[in-house]
Amino acid sequence: MADNYDLVVVGSGPGGYVAAIRAAQLKMKVAIVEREHLGGICLNWGCIPAKTLLRSSEIFHILQTLDQYGMSAENVKFDIAKIVKRSRGVAAQLSGGVKFLMKKNGITVIDGAAKLAGGGGKVTVEKDGKKVADLVAKNILLATGARARVLPGMEPDGKLVWTYKEALVPDTVPKRLIVIGSGAIGVEFASFFRDLGSEVTIVEALDRVVPVEDAEVSAFVKKSFEKQGMKVLVGASVKGVKKGASTVTATVEIGGKTQEIEADRLILAVGIVGNVEGLGLEGTKVKVERTHIVVDGYGRTGEPNVFAIGDVAGPPWLAHKASHEAITCVEFIAGLNPHEFDGSNIPGCTYCRPQVASVGLTEARAKELGHEVKVGRFPFIGNGKAIALGDTEGFTKTVFDAKTGELLGAHMVGPEVTEMIQGYTIARTLETTEAELMHTVFPHPTVSETMHESVLDAYGRVIHI
Image (cartoon, rainbow, N blue to C red; front, side):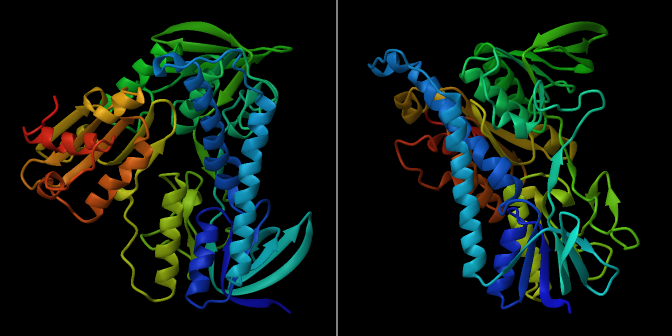
């Protein structure tokens, strides 16, 4: 006899578990199926443990610069095993927190891999090749996430060639490291290992690092990385990877010329692919394009009462995007008539050093779309709090429509900008113009004052430069 539910959620990452909780709040009978760890990749092998590692490397970097603060310390060392242990402990704590939230909200948790079973809301769950449950659901929500993309001939071996998963639990800090790909994952690991002493080479196929960001931000990050001692190769393609006994060599082509780069480890960070295999999508009307499930603004697929959210439903591949989609989708299922999901107001955050954050359109994209723009910039070196902190690297940039005053986009690079970008995100959500932003009082002294000054600069009213 199958168990009946209003909603069965497949996957318990930041999309899946949030969907389950919201559905339970709306008095639905909910089951969530997870084949590995509650919390999914984000809590266990992504956002949280990575930021925990980066906190350790940040502190180690600060300890190297104590003289500017009138302090000194001798024999400052790190223990990579303890750094990794702390990271794994934080991940375990948060995964346990999700387990508590499932129990608190009366959600049935099923351990195994789920598969659509022939229509009518049927779902089977297997564990280690054995069936553990038959479910029937009025609605099914696929939130299975994604995994690292693997390039032919560069398959990770867990020893010399790593994905993000191996890079999160290193047994040693490599003396020489190659990072292929300069998206968020690539540059975050580059920062982590560089601050712990690795000689880092970043190889990026496109013409700039963090290529989804505004061009000025990309140029600034590249310059900063090079100042830190990293080697940054852009417009570079990897033609092959050779593994030795204890080293790995990448053949890289730039401008028609090839060079060989030898390192102790290589991290492959070239994007992700959706986890669509084994879900029983064959014979359904669920459409898959480029390994991602095609959905509308409410998470609907082509199959009635089958929905998809998060990384498996395509970019941007961000935890907070998945959570927001989850709320929209579940409230649509419940008949609450939510607004369609709007990806244009999803902020992006990269936790390298210096941090990068943005929301909305880049300057170039705004112009491509036909906007006449007003652009403001304000450097952190002009901000009192940044000077007091001893961290003046970076700037804030704002892009406005010259005719309407609409905030089209905001781009930040510098200390703790990932904590501040939400201010611009709120402004865009509220359809704020430059007038409201200029009349907003920002507290002093704070780094957030750069946000205000950037707006003022766009309209010729900047004060402190």
